[in-house]
Image (cartoon, rainbow, N blue to C red; front, side, top):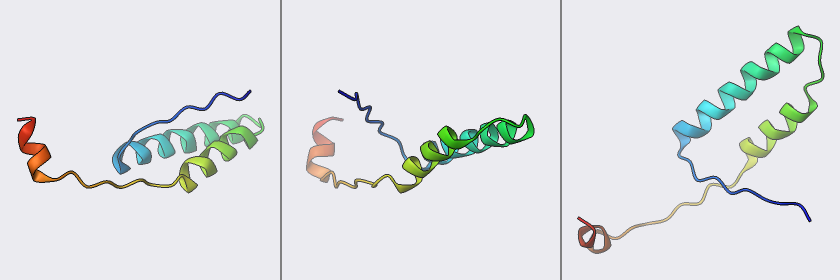
Amino acid sequence: MERKLILEMDSYDRNILLNALNDMRTKQIKDGLPTDPIDELMVKLYEAKQKRFLVSEACHERYR
């Protein structure tokens, strides 16, 4: 059974991760190594659905 991991991140975090993966991919290319695993992960991250939710102010005020 494949274990899945769910990460919660905003667009800033997502961009940092994509940039890091792209840097790693560039290094792999320079070293003449395969980039398939990195490419697959970048595609998964790029195509991941964004979930949006609304937090009401009443709920927000309760936790102040």
